[in-house]
Image (cartoon, rainbow, N blue to C red; front, top):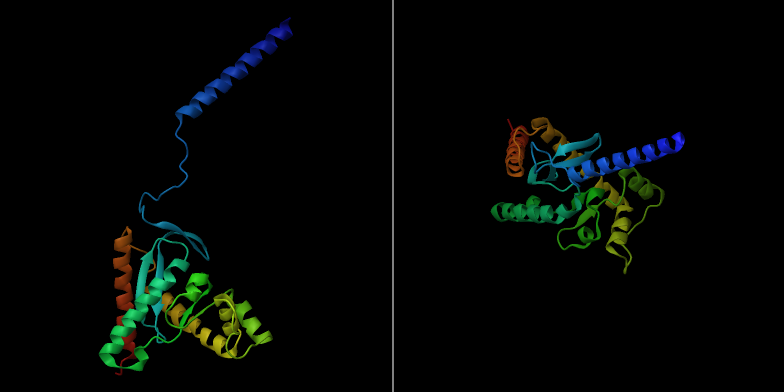
Length: 227
């Protein structure tokens, strides 16, 4: 009889504890599916080689001689949606320069972009000729070395197949290698001017990075000018 009473008491206690836990859970607020940064709600978590960073994604278009001609600050972690806007901005700026100078160096040649911009839309979009990597640079270079191709892409291939063919030619790989010697040093030197934002918000971030890019270009032009 004593054991039966203890069993009933334990069952009642367990039921009471479960009811209390359910009441506490009902009163508590559910966890948010998305968590914002209270210091800068417009910023986003950006993936980098060293992990995640709270900030913005900066899109930069650079000339062959490392002058920044177009720049945008965005909240997207993915670069694919920004190739066409940056390509349009670059083409427009080059058009203004060519109209003012008549210098063929101010015409857009071949645009070079890394694999982060590889998408069917970006490959097929109208506009200047472009080379967009379809994978890691070392794999791309190895394919071009081990199985080189010649001539234009075969008829009837898709934009992605055509790009893969071009990148496997000696001319295509030679031209694409210039990307690492143009935009990467420019981005690295821009980060030396501004490696951390001092203001918060998307518009202030744009203004601050544009100011840094202006300082970068002035320094670049000053050093290139004859003494």
